[in-house]
Length: 132
Image (tube, rainbow, N blue to C red):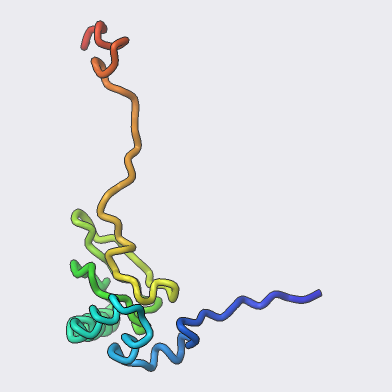
């Protein structure tokens, strides 16, 4: 009987340990063109965010940010980041599969609509009912 091994995660042919050694600009060469352009233009913002993350982790404080358009880099893997969705901070634990995506993609700003019962007067059958 063969025991199935869990497949090791790779991103563009590199495992997580190799990715974590890359700096932000080197990682930019591995992502698709739109994300590459964003990383190269905002590398200073991403690097300052990573510095902030390291400082907050040392102090055991949650990492909170309003900046939803930061591209997820390998150094953010396994970090719990609280991303603002316009009303509250949603906790996101960064997984390897999230590499190259933006933080805001995982903190949705709109809830799915859950339709309830129609109110009084909303339908023809309930129009003649009294409000009391």
